[in-house]
Length: 277
Image (cartoon, rainbow, N blue to C red; front, top):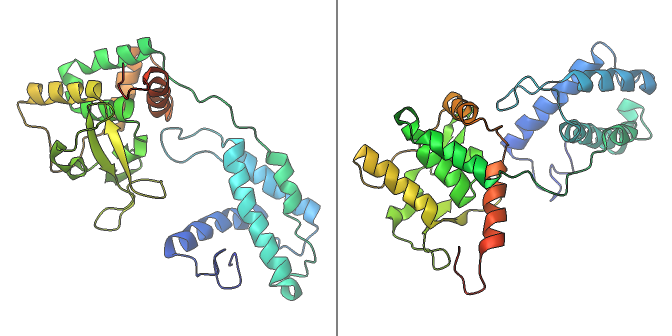
C-alpha cells in the first residue's frame, strides 16, 4: 500500500516508521473484515468496520481502557480512505472497485474541536505544587516545573509508554542562556536525540523558556537535594507518582492542561515592555 505513485505525497518512498504505522493501522481493517474480502457487499463490510472501530479502547496511558474518541476513529478511517483510493486508482482490475467505498464512512465520525483548551485555575496549580513539598515527591519537582513554567508537552519530559523518551539535561546548555524576555533560562527541545530516538512529536527543534518561577522551583529542588543544577542525565518521571500527586491534590489531570495553562497565563500577563508579571 502506497499513498502515491512512488510512495509518499511528495513522491518519495515512505519512511520505515510510516510503513510500520500503516501496517499496524491496516491490521485493524484486516481484523474488522475477518474472513471476508473487499469484493463483498460493502454495506455489509461497512457494518463490520463501524462495529469494530466503536469497540476499540485506548491501549496506552494516560487514558488506557477508555473508548476511542471521534478524532481517533476519524484518523483510522482516513487511512482506510487512502487505502480505498489506492484500490481504485492503482489496483482497480484486481480489486474490482471503481469507486472508493470507504469515503462515506468519514461522515460517521465527524468531530468538532473545542474552541477553548482546558486549563488549570491558579488554585489547582497551587494545590499540585503544595503536594510536591512532601519529601516523597521531591524527584517530581523538575517534571512539574517544566510542565507548568516552560510549556513543554508531557511526552517531551517523560512518556509513560516509552522509557526512552525522557528530557535530557544536556538540553539546558549548562543553564547559561538567559531569556531576555522573562529573565528565566532558555533551553532546547529537540525532536530526535543523538541516537535517532524521537523525543518530541513536533516538526522542528525549538527553543523554550523556563520562566523565573519555574527556575525558582528547580533551585529549591537542588537545595533540598544538595546538588547543582543538573547538566547530565535524564529528568526523573514516574507515571504512578504523577497520578498519586494529582489525587492527593484533589485535582483532575488534564492532558496538555499544564502547557495550555502556561501559554494562557503568559499571554494574559506579558507587558509590551517585555517583562512578565
